[in-house]
Image 1: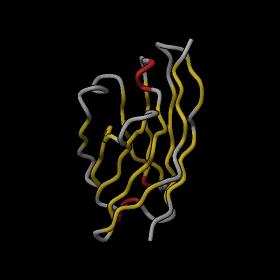
Image 2 (image 1 turned 180 degrees about the horizontal axis):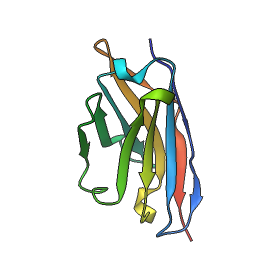
Image 3 (image 1 turned 135 degrees about the vertical axis):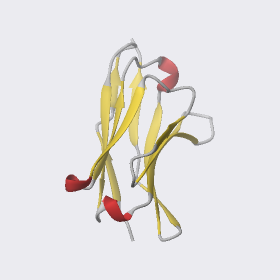
Image 4 (image 1 turned 180 degrees about the vertical axis):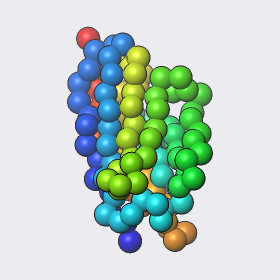
Length: 115
C-alpha cells in the first residue's frame, strides 16, 4: 500500500509560481510511476504530468514548458514546480502513484490562480 500526502497549494496571481509536494509512505524508488492530475470545478479529472522511477517524464501540452516534475528519492517526495500560472490552471491537484498494479491517490490540494 501507498499513502500520498500533498501540500503546497494556495492562491497565486496570474504569472506567479507555486511548488506542490507529494510525500509517499514508502520508498518512491519502488513506485514505477508517479504523477499529478487536476480537476477544475465542473470538469473531469485530467492528467497533468508523470515521471517513472528511471526519471522519464511526460507532460500534458497545456503545461509543457511551465511545469516541472521532479523526484527526491531520499525524501520519498515528488514535486511539481508550476511557473507562469494561468487562471485556467485553477483546480484541485492530486498526486497519483502506480504500485503493484494498483492506483493510489492523495487527498488533493487546491490551487487558485486569480488576481
